[in-house]
Image (cartoon, rainbow, N blue to C red):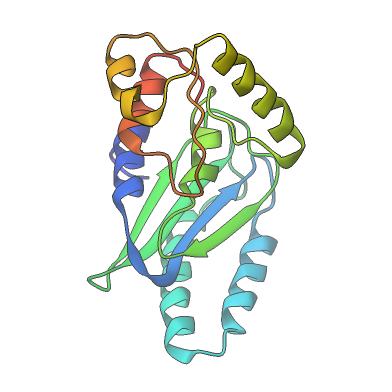
Length: 191
């Protein structure tokens, strides 16, 4: 386990950029036999045709396994595991204790950690809107616009500093900037 608290780890995870497709994010539910899924992930990695990429990802998996092999199951709300090969060819490993309960085993690999998915479990007031709820969100936004209660990105930092916001809606496939997320969470806003 890292010697840092969740917030410090989240800052490091947010800034981390690794080699292409050599960064793994794993969401492991509590009281769940994750060893079978870890074996499946390893088999999937072994099937990668590009030898160099396969070897790099297997190094990352070895580091993950060395940290979690002593556990049979995770307690509490589960565990968020982030490990990746950085630009200096060193595997970095992070463990986060989620605030929200993880329901299913999930894993992602890319050149950055899946911060959107991580944030959903790390904060009670962060949620990703599913396709089925997008229309209701659009309706709410239209209502806010009609009542002149909508602030756009350029003014958001100013409003965040004066505590005038109650909800932040972030429309992007990019990660929520940590500065905004951290301020929203510390003020108990709903991003």
